[in-house]
Image (tube, rainbow, N blue to C red; front, side, top):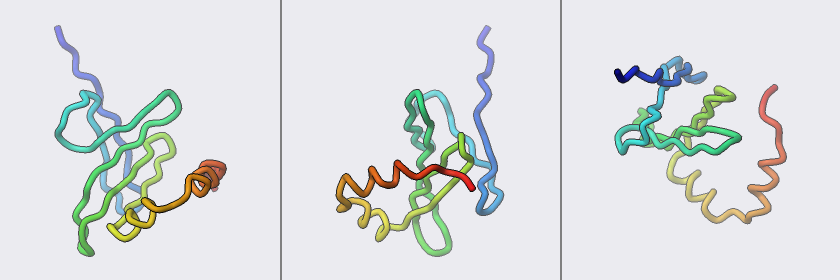
Length: 92
């Protein structure tokens, strides 16, 4: 007998929308990028201001949405910039 595996979910801190992601690795829905330290859920969302890429961290229950300009800006950053972001501790 196959038992259903619960789908992790949390409330989006920005608008209260319940965010969930599948563990089946399918091609439908959000993309889950994970390793032994963290899970990150990435999905494309339509907003009243256009399409955004949403990045959600279930472990920290934090979420950010980037438009095309912000994503383009990330694409030409030096690796040292990303390293400096990794040095920051999340939270209050």
